[in-house]
Length: 596
Image (cartoon, rainbow, N blue to C red):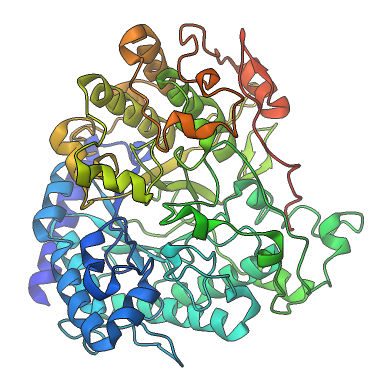
């Protein structure tokens, strides 16, 4: 214990000395996800599923197929070897400051009824998942990194995806007991790290990963308020981040100075429905922005949901109860949650950005792939969190990007894609594609470390983005090399970042703006033709285009949208034409009001 505290004290002294030449306002979270480790996703490490579990698509069926004894043996070895000390050290030396760790709700042994989950040995002892989580946190401490764990699974599933542990119809929000079990495990985790003396390293807690869009806001906000209270009981200064339900704009008026918009207005939709504890209307937001509810699908057929599937009943909570809960959420944290060893944590809304899960985006040419980040991704991220966006007045809810990647045109988990590796027909990593990936990464880093523009005279305001976590730190298959941060570092399309003590500039100042990267792709001209290699292949999109040859693969990249303040504002409001060229209209339904 003395050795651990001595290391922490030394690290703190180094940071204090370095802070004299470092600007805290420029600090950002620069992180990676430790995905496929404590919560399985088959496409990340498919060899783990060989043998009896070969037909399982998620951890639930993995454990069911193997039985608890064999599953425990296989998983204990996996937990011990998938994340290594050398991985952590390499990431730290490359400028990574934070680790986001998906954790399951059963990590302390809360396994009930016929649930097939396993924890390895007794939780906390060697061989258990909790033991390895604690070990990685200690490794992070030794390398002056911070750990933010994220509750990725809950009983009954919050979204029905493999990353929730079980591909199924999500029932979590229908079951008060399941909600309470989720809150309980967050309290156990917070207490565990406080007891271990690791609160200076385990500085962030995610209350729920990717809650489904159909979960009514009264339920998700009530859960967030209760979970917030319990984690701050044990870790008063911890950062707390919350999933945006694939719709950042739903949170834009939550926790404003005077409470949510419509809180006290008898004419508002929220106030009129304040006593309705039944399921609120189901909405499915269809969008081509890349901000949508299909994160790393294992099998697209298993991801499809209907309105009937998603319409649920909810746990009863009255308007007054919810009001009291939300008013007790403390936001008085540091202005810059990316700073190390802060005195008080912040609350952040977590958004995930991917292009490859939308058919149209997979086929965009190189310059438009980057241009989409600069305009549409930025617009969607910036839909939260505002008291008055026109006046440049944000709420206290800060912004972060919890998942993004260098991949852009290949659907993950598709059997045909993984078969390409087995048959030697995988797409080539040409010099041109590798160079494009580098600028695609630069563009996202620039956007996801964006400085605020809150000047009253500005026509277009945006909030500061506090930083990012890349998905994923490592992948088993070469097919998914563009998802692999360590491979990207090794092969050159992901940059080695300076520490903030060495150079405290944000990514835009290091590598150029998102618009600079788009201009690079335009200037490269014909060299970029053929860089985009969509999978499923172009000819599979007859349902999307009358003729696959008319798909926007080879359109004129020399005349892209141009983005000045007036045009961006018009684009946000009307989503039609930008500059001289027409940008394809975003496929969306009317935005639901905040509390539906």
